[in-house]
Image (cartoon, rainbow, N blue to C red):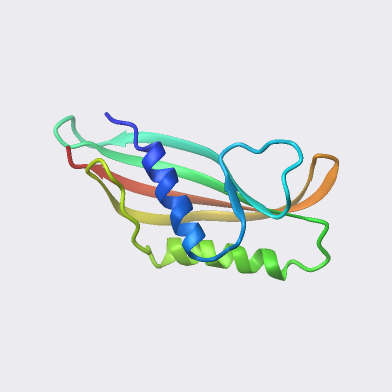
Length: 135
């Protein structure tokens, strides 16, 4: 089993940036970040398949975070752009002989939260990637 997280995250962030969201995508959020932003919060993986042909299932959780807004339209627009990548299975390539066989939206959850003593609006997006290791 090989770990594809670095390649998957790099390619997914590139695809998000290509959709012109205009937001910074973080894999680690530090104090004092500028709002709004996208935060890749969690990755879980499991192995599917035989030892002769590795198949991986990766669940990736993103958070689209806006602060001090009175209208959620801009946040929903950003979420829609990310969903277009997932729903249309817009291709992005992985290196290292990995291939994305499927991308599936698991769910989106919208909530209000407190971050750095600020009220923020968050949309959590969970997506599953089925990845084949062609090595």
